[in-house]
Length: 78
Image (cartoon, rainbow, N blue to C red; front, side, top):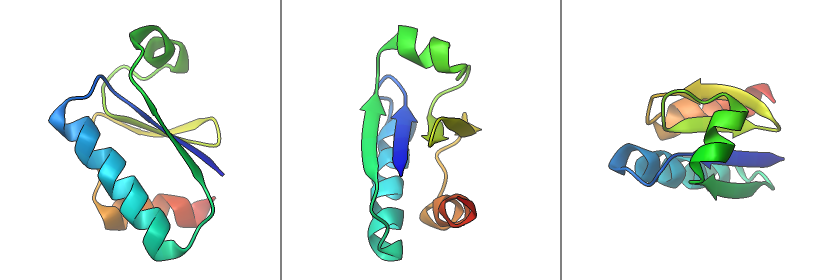
């Protein structure tokens, strides 16, 4: 599983990245997590509001620092 967190490094982006890592650890999922801060790549992905969460190429969330539980719900769907 490939998970990408899109954002320039704002506090919400940092929080989402932390919550993603916690959710992965708690679920015992094998996943690669990438933090993408390049604005061109963010726009190419179609993330208009940061932070953005992309799971296996599909944008699952943008503009919100999802909680650990919310991230776990999204990961459970994939």
